[in-house]
Amino acid sequence: MQSFSYKDNFLNKKTIVVWRLYFVGALLTIGSALVIGRLVQLHIMQTDFLRAQGNARTLHTVDIPSYRGMLTDRRGVPLAISTPVHAVWINPQHFQPTLAQQQQLAELLERPFEEISQKASQYADRVFIYLKRGISPGLADKIKALNITGLGLKREFKRYYPAGQQCAQLIGFTDIDDKGQAGLELSFEKYLKPTIGKKRVLEDRTGRWVQDIDHLQAAQSGQDIALSIDLRIQSLAFKELSKAVKQHQAKSATLVMLDVLTGEVLAMLSFPSFNPHNRQACQGSATRNRALTDQIEPGSTIKTFSIASALASRQFTPDSLIETAPGAYYIGKHLVKDQSNYGKLSLKEILQKSSNVGISKMTLALPPTQLLTTFRRLGLGNGARTPFPGERQGYLPEDIAHPFAHATLAFGYGLTVTPLQLVHAYATLATQGIERPVSLVKVTPPLSTQVALEPDVAKTTLDLLTAVLEGTGKRANIPGYKTAGKTGTTRIVGPQGYDPNRHLSLFVGITPAQKPRLATLIMVEEPHEKHYYGGLVAAPIYKNVLSKALHTLNIAPNP
Image: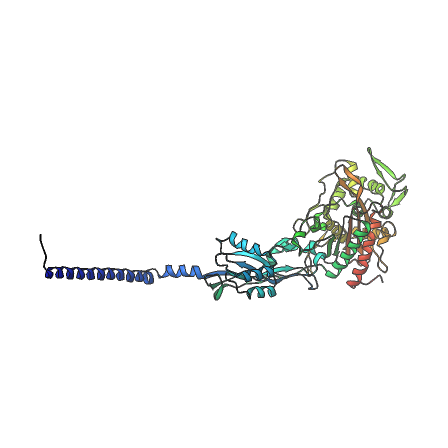
């Protein structure tokens, strides 16, 4: 058996220890070299990359909100303004409230306790979720004081409409992001919307705003716009329409008032209306601006312009007599009737008594192009008048092939107009045939104009219209002011044709008649069938509104 000496064992052990030291030293040296190399690589060769990665996790570009432009009435009274509010949001990845904090947050937000937890769990992979938007600054301060990790507040703006329902159909409304969705809010979106600013901010790992770094783009508020309407008149008209709808058990009532000197819309509204602050109410027929979106057959209110057309032909004068006896007139196999046998009537009396027979015989004595040309020049059934979204153009036939169609067109059937088109034609009559463009914003003269009717024709027709206030329109008379106007009553088309139990009641007037200033249309839809004529339903509303509006605008009575 072989054996080793003690000396040999000692030398072997010593050699192993030395080699171990060398090996460990080598490993440490290699490790150190690798670390130093990596540090050199990171700090010198990849500095830009690392800085970019760090910034991506801590530096963020955020929006700087600004005010949407304000809408005011012609006197500067606010109709639509943006107020500062806050949105509450969470980062689900860092949202860690205590039980007490979550209970307090739920109470402040008026949300179920479980809803907040469920939302955080449902969107756990996201970094931004809204809890509630549009909260007041005071409530935002209380929420901020809870000091919850992963919860933040974002400044926003919310639209507020001080006039409420009175102007809702005209002004329209915005969505939750303060962008125009309907009405003038949508029409003027490009002017009202603000320029959103941009800035770079430093955030901590939970998304909290730590510091502003620099501003990239300045925020700029939207443009303020002064509308043409006068809120005082809009308000009093709203009250009168509300009373009329209830009194006559009507479906709706509409008013449009123009300043004939400028073409500005001083009032435009319908009742019932809607609350623009209630998003659930911002739908349905109550949101319609009927003055611009409803197409109606104007009925007897169009007879004014049929008379003007006859006068423009120079084949008729105000004293021309037309035989209307026996109060019925056959055109082919179609019958045209009057309420009574009026006998011979002058053009003045035809308007005063609203004789369908007289209008028909007068119109058929002239070529169809005479009537169509006059209507087109006045803008009846022929195109939009404003930039309002959804405004209808109406309908006027290109030509007339049948005498009965010619006659019915002359007393208001076979064409459609919007209430605005109709009252605008009356305003053109009031300015001696000079058409001024309709404006929904406040305008400053001089204005663009064009001639729609010869001045003598317009003046004579206006004079003839004053006689209507002694007949069918007598309930529109205003003490101290002379008015020219015309009543109208039309049947509404139903599934089976014209419905004998559904009517539109109309009155269109110009006051004062000597120095015209206001042209106003009243339309009542489907009043109670016991009393539905325009002279009974619409004319009294005209009197009630105009008597107050004239004093509001300081328009002097008759000398």
